[in-house]
Length: 475
Image (cartoon, helix red, strand yellow):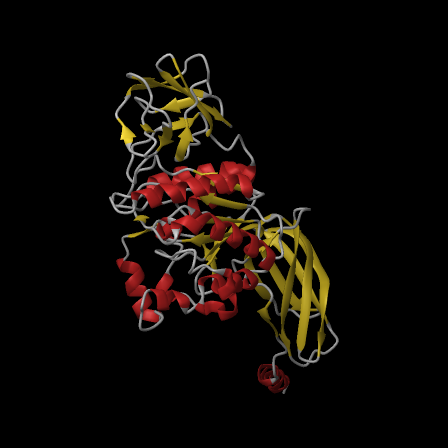
C-alpha cells in the first residue's frame, strides 16, 4: 500500500504544471553593456512567470565559477510578467547571472555578460574589412560583437556579413534579391576569403591595454559615399545607412564609448570632393545629436593608397580636407594610412589593419601624441626644412626617407629634390635638398598622387598624414 501511495505522489508531481520563470529580454547571452563614468552598469532583465504573482525574483552573479553576489531579490512578478535589475555591475566579465523565483529550485541563466565599452564601426569598405582572411586577429573572450543580424556573439573575423544584415539597405546597395539565412548564409560565409578589418584588432588591443571588455557594432558598407550616409535619411530607418546605424545603436543600448570611421574613397570625384569636408563635419555633428552624446569621441582614418590613375587631384583633396577636419571637429582624431601595404588595389592588408588598430587605440586612450602633423616649410641655403608638431619621440623612416614632392604655382610636380633626410639635430624636422632655386609660388606636398611611397612616422608608429599644398616660405 505504501508503494502505491508513493507512486501516485510521483505521478502527481510529474503531471502537475511546472511553475517556471523565463527570461525574454533585457539581457541576452554574450551581450556587452556600456559602463558609465563610474565604471559600472545596471543590467535590466524581464520575462514571464506563470502562477507566481507577487513573488520576488532573485539573482546571483558569478564569474568563472567564483560567486560574486549571492542570491538576493532584484525584481518582482506582476501577473505573469516580471522585470528586474542587477544594479551597479562593475566593468569586467564574463558574468553569469542565475535567476529564480524566491523559494523555487528552478534556475534560468544568462551567460557571458560583459560590462565595458561599446564602439560603432562605420564607413565604407576599409572599415567593413576586405583584408585576406589569413593570420587574422584571433577572438578574445572579452570582445563581443553585435552582429548584423542583431545577435550578440564572441567577435571573430569577418565582423561584417552584409548579405545577412537585418537592415534591408545592405541588400539594396548590393542588389541582392534576398537576405541570406540558413544554408545559403552558411555557404556564403564558408566561401569567403576576404573580410579582415581593423575592428577586431582594435578591440583586442584596447582590452590588452586596459583590461576593459569591448563590444563592437559593425555597421559599415563598402563603396558608399557621404550622400549615402546622409543623416537626413534617418527617417527611412533600416532602409538607409544612417537610419540603420542609428537603429543598431538603439538596439545595443543607446549608449556607446565612441565611433570609428573610415570613409572618403567614394567621394574622391569632381562632384563630391569640393564639398566633402562640409558634409563630413555635418555628419559628425548630427550623429552626436542623434546619439544624444554631444562630446562623443570620433576617430577616423585618412584615406590611403589606391593603385589607380583616375581623379588624382580629387583624391588628394579629400585627404587634405580630412586632415583639416581634425582641427575643426572637437573630440576627434585622425590616423594616417598612406604608409600601409594593400591586399588588393585599394584595401588595407590584414597585417597593417593591426597596425592601424594600434594607432586608433593610441588616439582613443590618449596615449602619446596624435603623430607628426605638418607646421611649416622653409627654404634656405638649398634646403627645404619641414617642421612637424605632435611627434612621439622623434621622426623615423624605414630606409631612405620618401614621400615629399615640390610643385610649381600651377600644381605640376617639379623634379628638384635630390635627397630627403631627417634632421639629426631636430627630432621634429625633415630636410629636403634642392637642386637650384625654387620658383615663386612653389608648394610642398607629402603623399602626392594616389599610390605614393611614404614612410615618415614617429617612434610610436604614428604616421605623418598626406598633406598639401603647403606654401614654402623663403624668409
